[in-house]
Image (cartoon, rainbow, N blue to C red):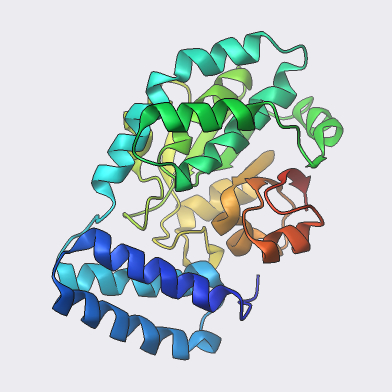
Length: 280
C-alpha cells in the first residue's frame, strides 16, 4: 500500500517515542531524530509505510547499539497476555460461534500495541474490546475455504498478540498451522523468540518471513517463506503493518486487524477502531 502524507507525522512521532525508550541521552535522541527527519524527507523512495518505518528504527539501533530496544516491553506484554490466557479460553467456550470469536480474540490482541504497563488496566481494556463484534467479517467465505484446506499460514504482528493468536491456532486444529514472524527485532513485532515464549510452538510451526520490516514486504521475504506463502491453502495476515505490506500482492488473503488509523479505516470502509476480517 502506498505511503500517505498522513503517515509521515505519525512515523516521526514513533521515532521520537522509540528514541526516548531506547536511551536517556538527549544527544543520542537528537541524532536519531535528525536521521529520522532525513529518512522522512525521502519517503517517496520507499515502497510502503513498513519499509519506511524499518529505516527509522534502524537509526534507533545504530545510535544506541541496542539490537532490540523493545525487548522488555515485548516480554512484559507476553507475560500479561499469558496471565489472562485462561480467561480468553473461557470467553471462547462461552460463545456459540467459536470460530467467529476465536478470530475476534486474535484481532483483539492488536490493542496490546497501546496497552499501559499495569496488567489490570490492560485486562479491563481487553474485556471491553472482546465483546465488540467485527465491522466486516468474511466468515462464511473463510468457513468454505477451511472445508478443503490442509494448512493455514498466519502472518504475525506484535509480540503480545501471539498469545491471542494461540487461541485461534488451537481452534483451527487439526489443520497444519504455520506461524510466520519477523526475521529480527523491529518495534514490538513478534520474532521467533517471542512466539516461542507465548507457547505457540505447541500448536503451530513457527517460521521466519525473512523480512525485518514491521510488515511482511514480500519482495524482501526469503524464498523459503515465499514458497510457504504461495502454497498455503489459507493465509491470515494480522495487524495494520502486514495489511500495508501484503495487500495488493496478487494473492488474496484474509486480513485480520483493528483499524486504528484513519487512513486504514477509510481504505477498509469501516469506522476508526473497527475490527476487520476481510478477504482481499
